[in-house]
Picture (spheres, helix red, strand yellow):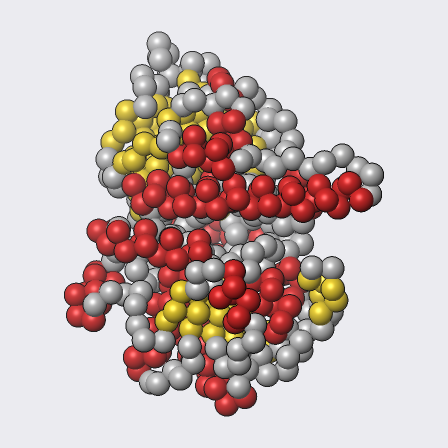
Length: 466
């Protein structure tokens, strides 16, 4: 029997990445992420699995972002006992993120249950608990980039640097059906491919062998602005806020994006006086930043040189990390500050409070620095909704809204095509992790320019890797 691949999640949508691979008698998962967005997305996280978790031999994780890792604790709670293979930095970041996600799951379930009781409906159960997250964290096994990992008689693995966030990896799998005369099958998962020439982390690697390629398509059909232009726009926003006395609110993913934004703000403040206190109001971001400090070995040369020349990258006079909820609330009484807070799509966490207190102020600036998925508060703000509902209250949108795509951690369409062009033409390329419009746009370009055979899978679609 040839190997098979079933696309379980992130099929014609951006979140919930998950794949099931069967090679001979071995069954394993690649990623197992949360669906993010509205209530409908949250309900997907509670649906029955289309397999028995106890029968999964192991899981391979491309990187720690919650839309790739966030359902692993539920998998463990329902019987999965295998190893979770990841790079060392991913394992450390996932430990921080999964505990935080479990806390959010429990708090969200408590809030939804109170609403359900008032409406006479059934209680809402969390997808998993902090105990489940701790058990999952105990199942991680760490590996180095470039290491050949033997996962049994039928599967070999190598991690390549994806250049997306710290520890992010492209997976090169060699499937060797035991007892079969068929040739090995080379299967590559791109994970999330980063933009080249970004700070802190190295550029995405390419050139691996792929009979079958699973490629992300988040920014299919789109081009990012140049990073240098985004930096100049951010510099201009700081000057405008200084002049008006307004706040700058930056919804930012706690892992990856926040550290990069800190890097750029430090650069701006070194070149000219900022005069604006910068607050990272996210306990998760603070913990993740500590993980970044511990893994300097996978920084790029520029970042290592900055550490050597100027001391710690994530410490400078204007930068402050808040600790308690009281400190977070106190920021809402401040004027003339920069607040970086999670979540990056403005769907949960402290950022919603800061938006509630600043969106209606004409002197304020809201700066989006990452992808905003469908149905999220961030997407509604970007698309011009006015007012928007936050914590049940309608809030007018009078602040200046900025979308700095140059700071995205995802490659844009041109960069994805360039990356894919360095792989010998696969038999089939599957486009996932993108909304339909983006995925089909990238499909057309890969077919016309590279001559690739490309499919855009539907949820649950199964492919034979012959």
